Length: 319
Image (cartoon, rainbow, N blue to C red; front, side):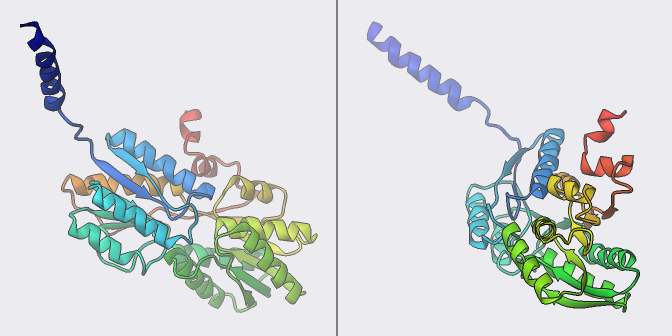
């Protein structure tokens, strides 16, 4: 009789564990197009908070570099195979990521795009800054700083990324409204600080009368600021940048950067997840959600509105 006790105990344990209910918490992949920039840290904070508020599991995984298109495709395909419930994606490339989004749709997995869209109607919603309007603001600010005239340059980042394409388009439209500004140079930073420094050096060497620069993302702004500072040109060449990393804010305060065009990455992460949950719950959502854009200067940096934007915990801390 005793020899049957152990097998019976094991059988009972198996029954208990096998019958235990599996977690039904939805799993949502949030895939940024990079991990290096502080912008993506803010996106993750928003996504994680939404995960807590809405009781869903957030899987945060993206390529280290924004140029690693194949890496992001592999991440999306892997999570399709793992049968995640939804995907929130900032696409490294608008064209290259479209086929893998089709695979997600075929698998019944809804997709929300944030920050950088894909060339497809499949995503249920695109959550992002109006980058055309934002870059038109950059031209307005640069014109104000230069008194309406002067030679200017643009440092975009990665050709093929929708954010880059729309920011180039917006700045070009903005310059049309300010005929006194002449675009004399445009070089890509490839989303890297070191490359931005190098192209800034090239631009200021080739154009001794350069009056202003618009750097269209965080890495481009930081690299450009460092190059201007090392050449003793900080404040002499007006610099309008994009985003608001700690390094950018430091350069704004010390006068190397004159203004920042600032998005709301926390809101992108939060709303990307929230809208994905809405879709999973059968709700109808709009195809576009604009997270807004702000101009940050030394004059308004400490205002409650801007502090809340830069630090989402500010409002709770100051209640």
